[in-house]
Image 1: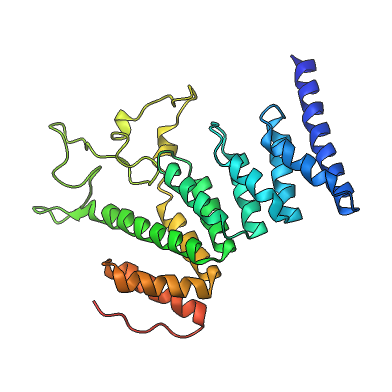
Image 2 (image 1 turned 135 degrees about the horizontal axis):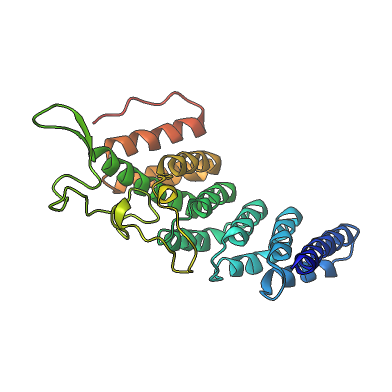
Length: 276
């Protein structure tokens, strides 16, 4: 077993070393190395760590020719998502606006998982892309997080008879005869898909052990804050998208205030007083 692990470690180290060598040769003028690095990202038979390193280097190189390969990596169905995160970050570094739609589709699919890291990587990359399309996706994300956080706040109410604060596992009136809630968790990846903590599955669909305490972590406030920051980075295109969104959509007072605050941050002026 020791020799097997040692051989595996040597293989991974050698693979990453070769990738670094390819990168150096590319920087020295060997254009053919770019295709070799892209091929490694696209091939599932290469060690996972080597593919991750290759995806990271493509972002450092910043050549738009790598965009199709990085987008393809977002489509792979794998339990691990770190390669997707590396591909997303590299797409953000390259700054190709056409990648926004595919990153948006990945955000849609991520709601079926508990992986907040991939959503946060996606919103950061959308901010780096700086296009109207990426701004539109980020605005929709803010609206989604606004609804989730509003529902979470509604789960905390004062008792009618005692005046004490109660946190309901689901919205009031949705508990069973034992007093246990029948709703889902508040986090975006698993809301509505699972029962209360006592009903949470102990094994994932991949056969790995699940920790219910980790599943109860609610990443929504952090994801919302990163989405806010990303929209500010988009800049002038975000102002256009926000103006259009406010003019054509109903929204909560909180969301309207936040969008107006983002416009003010971009334009560098004090926010105007919002009206209910």
